[in-house]
View 1 (cartoon, one colour):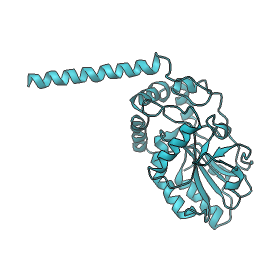
View 2 (cartoon, one colour):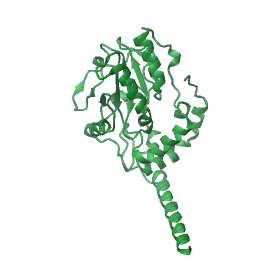
View 3 (cartoon, helix red, strand yellow):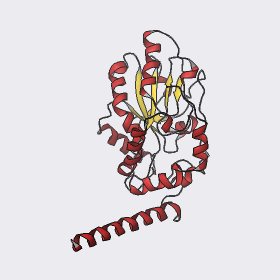
View 4 (cartoon, rainbow, N blue to C red):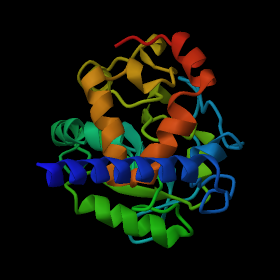
Length: 277
């Protein structure tokens, strides 16, 4: 019994030491990768992020002069994505747990409206910067990194088309660079719905209005609240936060908790958030 007790003490001490190292790593030491103005390696760098934009409002034209790529690295024209059917464009990355959490519901919508041929709507994702970079997933250094990760997603059950933004986030920065936002664009190239965090049930409602009733959704249906806890259940949020360690690494989880989760600015913004689900 004494031996077991000693082992437990040593184990707890090792865990405490590891936790202390992680906290020091994400608060005192410089971030592992230099900040290029878009791809960050720590939430401390997000505070320097000058890339943020609210994006086009509902009723405004969606950008079409920005270059994005297919999974083979071939440039594609944005306007071609909504030329014949409404477009659902969701942001995502390998290290975004909320994107993964919404994945099954988005695959259901893909089977319902797109069916692989844009039957009633075209539903796909835009690969953006890594949401939670860490030891397991570093920030992108070039387009090749993003293309490689897009292939990884396709091997994890994502059957929707994956389009890849440039390494500098040319389109993402214009649209409000959140990790799992979603836009719906009609065939006139105008935004008819947008949400800072993806709500698949709302996307379904919007597509039903567009494709079955030939109606535009009310602008009030769109969401601008930046606090994900207003969109998802407490149980889901705990699962998403825990999964950061799996998709980014334990340092990514520590970085998020220490440098982002308990920021006073975040709490104030959350208190002012209102969404209609």
